[in-house]
Length: 277
Image (cartoon, rainbow, N blue to C red; front, side, top):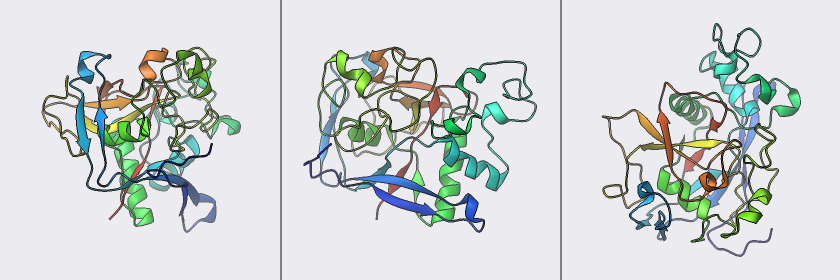
């Protein structure tokens, strides 16, 4: 896809090196030139929690992962720290694929080597934050979860429409894995069309954790792209929809939420953001 939007730059390869070569890996980050730019966040045609539509203005640039974090990339962290195992590999957990008595994750075939490029699932918000901290320490770069505003800005990629490709629901299966085409499970990242800025799986495949605390409207949320934080709630924002959701849930403005440490499931993952000085 040829892209003439000056907000977009070709993905950059980032190598994460480990003393053990087999635990080194690469990430692809897409640079979004947000500094000095604004966009309209939310939707007048959506749910009440997507309102009011408001202008968000950035004073900084950032890079967003070209894809959601995959099983392979997440497991480097697990093996390096011996912690934050996904629910389906956690010792003693009833959902453990090998030893548990609940087959909740088994239909996703997550241990299959050919499935290691599917998005990581079975991790909560605190697991995702821990991964970002570990990656920052390993790389010397500043990785974190995106704010809700950063996520929507990158998802929209300069578009005001329901999805980054337009308003035609019939086109969605070209850009997203959702309940009409996913065959009931996650799919390898990057196997649908990207948005105009070269970001894949922004619509569907897995819900993605954001930094923000949940709030029912945008009345009092930041207008500078930073995350809304409220220590009185443990509910965190999710964006993007998943393989098991209807088309409407994958809209650019659609919002959902889960508890930050209690909920782990087979349709929630995350994507990295790298801050730029």
